[in-house]
Picture 1 (cartoon, rainbow, N blue to C red):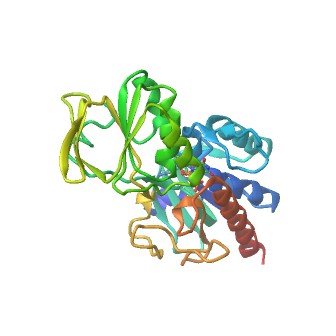
Picture 2: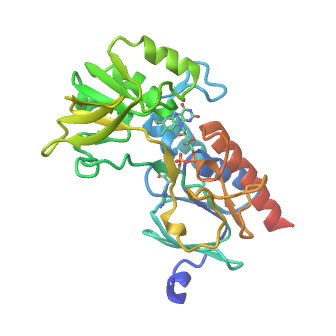
Length: 312
Ligand SMILES: Cc1cc2nc3c(=O)[nH]c(=O)nc-3n(C[C@H](O)[C@H](O)[C@H](O)COP(=O)(O)OP(=O)(O)OC[C@H]3O[C@@H](n4cnc5c(N)ncnc54)[C@H](O)[C@@H]3O)c2cc1C
């Protein structure tokens, strides 16, 4: 970033929040209430990953659960009520070492006494032939976003964790058949979801099975799979992939922050990273449980720690 670029936006916020998911949004709520000037930089919609999911059934105080989209709208309303400034901005580059931190985005440059990194995760690719070529043409990483294109069709879901199981349940209401492909002989997701999936009539689970190729000219027409050593072809028009996720922060390349080998940020109990005044919260940090409730908790802790850093 050049000196001219840095000077483009002269306001120095107390806390510049990267990402408007549950972690970033909660940090903003706590930050404002602690007397900090905050700004949220978000490239899509407030609410984060959960707004792309059908249901949020495990967040306290919603006895009937809530749709991901409604959760996002309520969060946005709460931020509006507190007049939290939110910019639609894709973060491109950061400079975090100095006393004032700089963030370059598609909506201009922002500076802050502290920065909170809360840009979540992105899906891992399966890494098989056809995946990238047919992305958006039958290959998807989000059933809630794309299921409507596959009404009454046969599809495959790849994975065995919570995300794969939740999305299978969602898809089962729309599609005619689901091949649920898992490379092991048991699921990793929670027991309640496993039981629900195994009871669904239109779901065939293929255990010990891996995908070797996604086929199709222009759009997905099928999958080549290897089921316990046997090659098999599945005629499907869509494949939904849940092969885990990884930290989503390409803009941190070269930053002197400690991460795990998968790029998750190392933090202490106060969400402090290895750089003074730089915090991380939510799915992007190394942690045991990546959920909305823990992301919100991280955001609250980070903003409280930032307030202490600034005011003491
Ligand atoms: C299919 C699926 C189902 C799930 N179901 C549940 C569930 O039932 N219950 C539950 O508690 N959790 C669930 N989760 C997990 C939950 O969504 C996450 O734990 C939570 O959203 C993490 O919040 P976060 O704020 O850390 O990150 P995110 O929610 O990922 O938010 C990060 C935000 O940063 C933004 N961003 C990213 N890069 C940039 C950039 N360069 N510039 C600007 N903005 C950027 C993104 O647009 C996003 O809004 C589910 C996740 C998935 C994928």
